[in-house]
Amino acid sequence: MAEVLSQSQIDALLNSISSGEEVVTEEQDGSNVKVYDFYSPKKFTKEQLRTVDSLHENMGRLLSSYFSGILRVFCDISVLQVEEQRYYEYNNALPDTALIGLVDLKPANINLPDSTFMLDMSNNLSFFLIDRLLGGSGANSSMQRDFTDIELAIMNDIYLKITEYMVESWRDHLDVRGELSSLETNPRLIQVYAPEDIVVIAVLNVKLRDMEGTLSVCIPAMGLEAYLGEFTSKYTRISHKMSNERLDNMRRELIQEVLSDSELPIKAVFDETTIDVADALRLRPNDIIPLKKPLNGIIRIEVDDTPWFMAQLGESRNLKAIKIIDMAGSHPEEPA
Image (tube, rainbow, N blue to C red; front, side, top):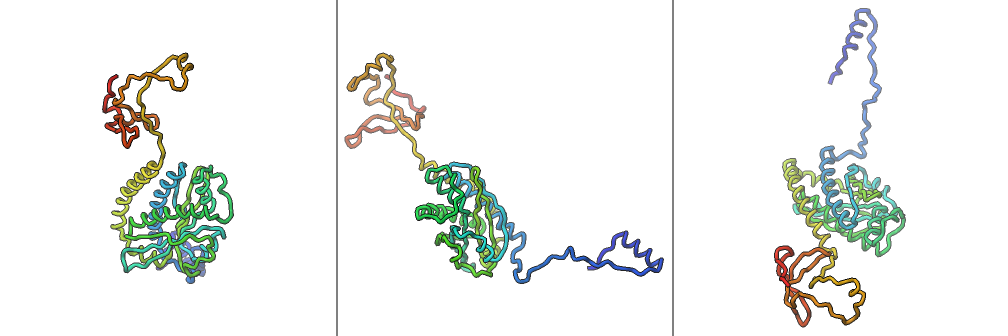
């Protein structure tokens, strides 16, 4: 394409012609030239990388709800960057004490290849999770050492959950199933990809209270190219709407799952009475306090000191028992 001259350049050219001076052209200094590495060509467009970014944003929202539930602290997860590089560059940047999870992703479409993803969590984040799950405050999360067998067992359960949410985020775009195949403690011995293979690295920034860590996902370019070919723009928009509903349902189920494991005290209140302080001080073992409630009366059941049910006294297998008959407030107590 011919270069377009500015008005000042046109005026200078006309003046030089009229004066008979030699026209001198300015050489380009090459400042607009970008160096392209043919040895390491880029396989993915910015639009494709934005799709990967959006996919991991959904994954981050699911994980933030999960971490907040199990750790009882606020968690915020966002995508820090999505970049394309050689595998050996990613592997060389990993510390020797890194804990790597290998996830096998298998599409339902037999024409698409299976892939192995790598999950890496920074050590400060791993030790924070372990300390909190074992009842600590998470203050000793800056350690740099190998993991013990007990810590590996705890992290294996966490990586299983991360795998579950990662596969769930992929299902918004592609019908896949996945599982955590192994948990490796030495990244130098992992031979999943060739050193020169192109991979896409999605780095998620995890904020837990006053601590920050990273969670990275390494995706092979060969599998990702095939998967992105299945992502049509129409299907992506429809899936994004569906993912919001699915995300709300998963959050609701996660909250219910966490709450269902909580312990609450429950007690049956037979009756209540008041006595003078002087009489209370004179109480001794085997003393009898008369109550106005009949033996077959309706009593109140309290959950965590809150009236919740109304129940009937009785027996079951020669043991004292109660039978819940209604919710509290909807059934009047039997008068004395």
